[in-house]
Image (cartoon, rainbow, N blue to C red):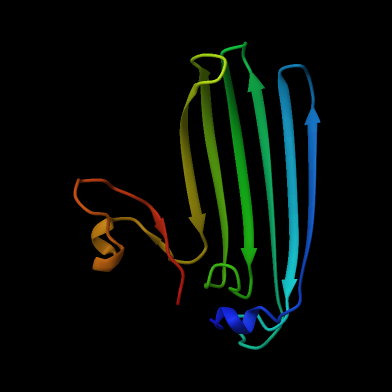
Length: 148
């Protein structure tokens, strides 16, 4: 990738559209769409123009004053690899359950699943270079890595 100093002169444009909808008192829906471009930012074709696009949607449901749940989906296309360092399309889905413990304190349980059309997800910490491993413990983590 280009150095950060060289990237400071590139022209970049972003269009960001957000819609928030309250379907009922308990059911909400949020949409987000982004389109962006940058001169000379392509990793696939160095020195060429790059574009990327992403979208997300969130459905929330408030069961009562204490409990709510949400489903979130996200999609991101980095066709020239300028944002992630790899030419790829990413998507994820997240399921969320929130419990209010008091007026200001809550706990949240969340499951998230991430995918890419390229092999950039490390499934085991042992597969990572020594400098990128977490110290101690037997934790299993998913890490997204980008080409450098």
